[in-house]
Figure 1 (tube, rainbow, N blue to C red):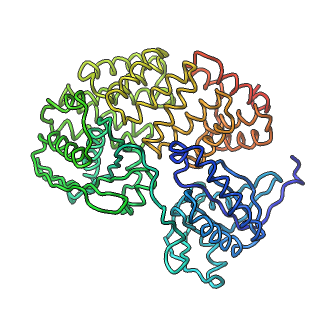
Figure 2: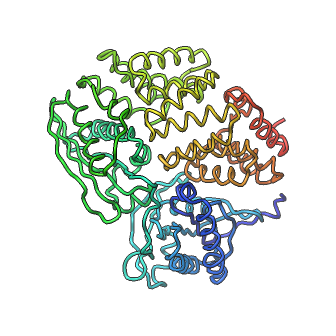
Figure 3: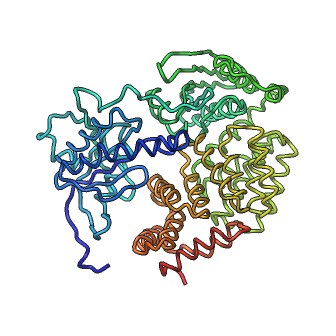
Length: 576
């Protein structure tokens, strides 16, 4: 590509994607593809052409368009949302005015980046615009603009002010069919419980209570329970319950609050129907801390009873016989979980100290041993805190100790599966992953661990199915898109793999590894310029990226993926 083929200009950029696309594909892939094609043919393409815009590219579950004026972009977005009101697909749209770089095939630059980021802030069937775009149209269009404040945007030094476009006298265009695609069994999401203790630092405790209730509910095979990672994405918000249900694909939401005072804890909980907003059940519990497990059991039983969910005999047995909690050990366990979520080398060290303290207080805290094993695994495959292959012996010892304490804990089996994967004992990893799912049919980590073991063994098709099920339970866990794309790439399903890699990059803009996979895919498909552009982005993020570390770290026993990965990078002349 010559420098003369590159142009720079000021443009209005419209970025759009389909809310909940991954879940829609899981529930009805044929119907979703048909609806997407119909939306493009009947609404999107003619609307953009009619407003003198151009589609720059489609991104699997969305598109990027360019207009000469912001007014044209906003009017087009409103026309599209009105035209799509009867569609089962819910689009989010973001518009920005900014400088772009056009290489003849794609557009790049901060103007595009901001449009993509504010699109992610839009509501379903909604339109958000940047402050720069707002200044161009505030006195030219008959719509109202709601100021949502300034937002931090990745790769942009200053906060960006964002406005919501309000049309039709109030809300953005909506449909009477705004209902979630529901599974064929009762489904529930547990939102983070409010911390009512008067001390913001006690938030880890209310989070821990809600997470334990998720774990207890997850063991009911005739119930679908959304993973903590996704339901806690609403932390710090006051979301519309119906919106939560649409986004997560569930019918019911459990919300509540926790007040901790000395050695007593008060829990309020209520179950809400997200379709009509009606209350199904509510109760309050005021107990000693050592009885917290009893409270969690009671909440779980009340919910499954209210939803008329029948527990299997095995699930009934697993509810019996839980001992009283050790308040101090439980406190450190909750603190350790909270630190672990920060996912940095320093946070892992802090989390490790908390789990070790929990074990010092109560040596029978099985989850603490399991989490110490997971921490070491995480440090190993990320190259953090001087972890190396020698650390894997300690990883195994911790996982085995967790099994000795409680082999019927699904998290313990997940940790063992993860450990055995990185120790390259893939048969044992598969066995532990299957056991984790047997114990907890809603454990997204269990499907992830089993999928990893199957993928590395060469059973890429079944691995992709496991990752899809994981996404159904944890739709916000973008790393599953990375794993699923990798399995599809090994199968040669490049269109599906590309869509998942792009979705992962949109959700996690700083990822280097997903970009490496996508560059290899483009190279192997003969799309050399695209491969080199993605590689350029990768090098900006991580100049020290080493492709050979992929071979030395990932424990494949078949060559399908490596052949495509290294072959594609070589075809694009990105490695020797």
